[in-house]
Length: 67
Image 1 (cartoon, one colour):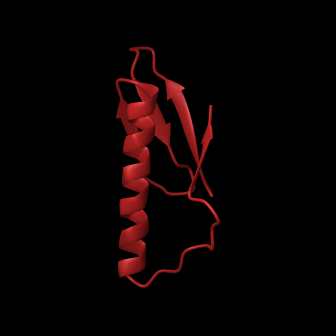
Image 2: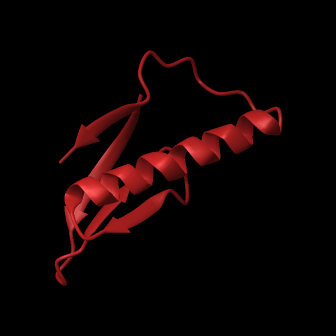
Image 3: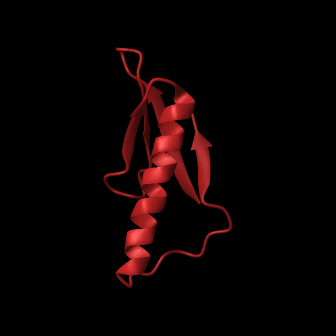
């Protein structure tokens, strides 16, 4: 399960990051938007890894929200 860390920036935007997947960082006007964008980017990164023959850990679920 990949954790999504979320935080509100000083300018009001939300940022969501998946620390286990370097480079997966997304901003949104709302917390929900930032989380959705981070999830979409994470799935893209995981798909790219699979396409290139990289192994992925066996996970029961994909995301866990951490506030």
